[in-house]
Image (tube, rainbow, N blue to C red):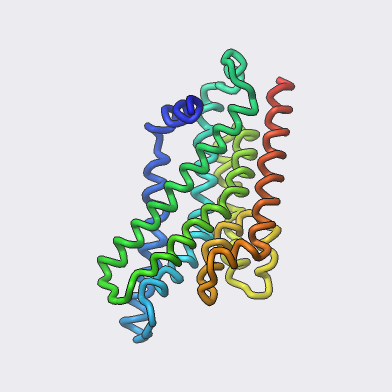
Length: 253
């Protein structure tokens, strides 16, 4: 808990809070506007559930591009403080291990991603209210989608933490994460290429968030398909591999 408090003190005055607030808002606003202005008003599309269809439009942009990019920005930011202050070398003066220090950053990032998903949920609820949707709010599907997106982001944030901890260049880490997020839109949007997403960690958040939209399966159905096994496998590989390389790199200096 003390290490998490330290992470909070390091990041509380940074710009990551604006990122967490604004990056989900952009695709949510865009997705709702597409549904209201184009699908409904222009093409006169009739949906059985306005909220669910609007969330489906949002899911084309938020979990495919914005959420993976945001996770990369968060990982780069929590490591930027250490790189700029040369804090990595100062850790040895404290009664904590490299392992504890690294895992505290990962845990802090998972908390930030969870907060991001809660904010995205609230922002969509507000957008739905402003748009005067008449249909019932799909609470269960929305909550399941948010949770699965967060779960799918865990292997990705572990990998992005390893990359950001290794590279002292903040810009390089951010650009790398942005570029690798770009193919996700094509992978998740293609039935033929969808299976590639299981081998591409940047796709996992979108696969989790959109899977629940397909014929309304339960969260248990989603977790029992390959998504669960692949997600856990990538999480263990990314976290343990990143931790091993981090300790080895810092110990050699």
